[in-house]
Structure formats: structure tokens, C-alpha cells
Length: 173
Image (cartoon, rainbow, N blue to C red; front, side, top):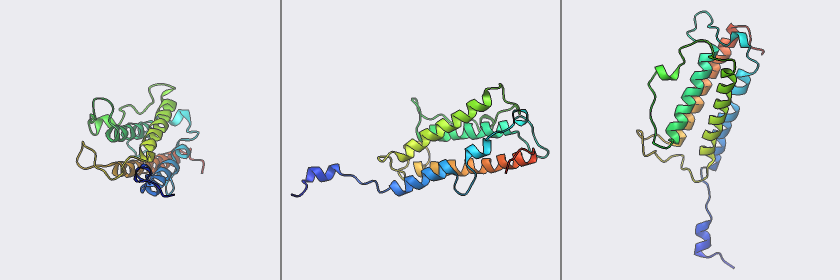
């Protein structure tokens, strides 16, 4: 018995599934760069606000910059109710203080980074999301471009994070 025309239209193939899988792996596991969890694991509390010689920022500032930029990319890719509202570059992307504002701020920032990354990956993994379709807002950006931007941005700063840890003598590897 052959499938009817109506049955055939219900069957959809996600031609972008292999790309979705690769993007997810890139964002989650690091592949050619350090994974987020490895970079932040067991960072000494007393060194989180220390600025090593010849660097302009502390680990806290790098961590927060990753969180803020990632959230901005997520908000751009899936604007909250009311639409996307850009934040001021570069001031709003970096915390002013070298020190975390509280003892819980470090863990809260890490949890937010993980949560927002999970949300972004859910956007990518949605079979009906067209990775190539330009957003109605912006200047032609699409979900693929934003995923690559996020991976590139995070990997760059995670590399800096590891260098900072080495300069502070707290990189275990």
C-alpha cells in the first residue's frame, strides 16, 4: 500500500540535523578548545578578583564578560517579549569591579552561563529552526552565524581564562 499525498507531507526530514549536531558539540564540549567547566573548575576563591601583572582584568571580570556577552547573543537570537534591546558596547559587557560583589556571585554567574548555553543549544536543536534564515531584525544575521559567534567568543575568552590561571599559579594541568 502506498502512502497518500497527505501522509507524505507529514513526513519531514531535518536536512540541517548533522550541522545541528556539530554546533551542539562545539558549544558543549569545546572540541578544539577548552571546555567551560574545565576552565572554571576549582578556581580558588581568594584569586577570583586578582588582576595578574600586564593583564587588564580579573577572572571575575572574564567570567562575567562571558556571561553577559552570551546572554546578549541569546537575547539577539531569541528576543524576549518586547524585542531585542542592544546593550552599550563596551561598557555594559564588562563589570567595573575586579572583585565579585558577593560570595555567591561566582557560582551564580557560572549557573547562568550554563543555563543560557542550554537555552541557546535548544534553539539550535529545534528541528523546525532554519539555521540559515536571516532574522527579521538585525542586518542579515541568522542562527548559524550566532552559534558560530558564541563558540568563537567563548573559546577566545576561555583561552584567556586559562592563561590567567597559569599566571596566578592555579591551573592544575
